[in-house]
Amino acid sequence: MEEKVARLREMVRESDNIVFFGGAGVSTESGIPDFRSVDGLYNQKWKYPPETILSHSFFERDPAEYYRFHREKLVIDGVKPNRAHLRLAELEAEGKLRAVITQNIDGLHQAAGSRNVLELHGSILRAYCSRCRRPYPAEKMNHGQGVPRCVCGGIIRPDIVLYEEPLDDDVVRRAVDYIRKAEVLIIGGTSLNVYPAAGLINYYKGDKLVLVNLSETPYDNYADLVIHEKIGEVFSQI
Ligand code: CNA
Image 1 (cartoon, protein in one colour):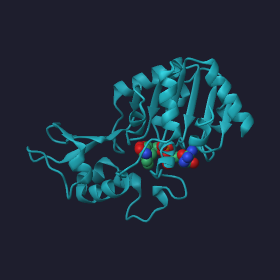
Image 2 (image 1 turned 60 degrees about the horizontal axis):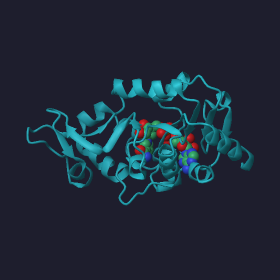
Image 3 (image 1 turned 135 degrees about the horizontal axis):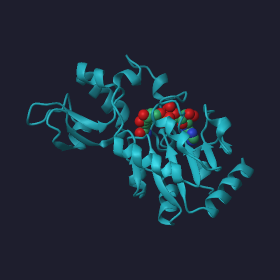
Image 4 (image 1 turned 120 degrees about the horizontal axis):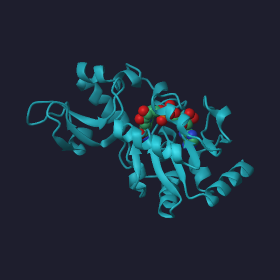
């Protein structure tokens, strides 16, 4: 591990064009469960798998059940950025990191101080009416009771990309652009199983592709450096 982290440290030291692409594993050390780890949401008891509840058709069909899951599983009070989020924010401030591209919806990169964060799947810290699109503070949605309603009668929904919904074109375009031009691409805390987000990796053209993930991913063979360790521990050493 030490040798690999030393290689990563060297890559980071030498570059001012680093891009980070991450997923749920970046936030597990903050106490937010991911989907696919042993204690992730797939392995917890719930009536339906998370991909079903977090889908557009399920939200339309049973918003009450959606909100039960949302408030119990997605909204976790008192979470704080961990060492990975904090180090990424520092690297941006040092002029080394160009962008954080995240599949996470928890807002922890911004809480850590990162400014250029591309949220591929949106954020549970924003809400809007699914009928008239009026924006709402997320507080009532995340902590209230029942199904939150807009003054127009429409259902208030989180500003996240549910399964079956397309990603925002502009966010994807910007993410592709950063990845295409990156010198060092660090991918961390993602199983690289959820498409189209995972496909972004194919736009990278450089020779410094680093994967930091606890478990193996389908892209391990493509990477120039693979570190199977906790991302917070790795980032506290670079
Ligand atoms: P995933 O499929 O659950 O994969 C997470 C990966 O992270 C797994 O391969 C784990 O081995 C790895 N991992 C877990 N903890 C660590 C750690 N401390 N250090 C390094 N690696 C770790 O999650 P993906 O992000 O790949 O899947 C995409 C989904 C999950 C996205 O749509 C997210 O919106 C969604 N999600 C987000 C959050 C969040 O916002 N925090 C939480 C749960 C799920």
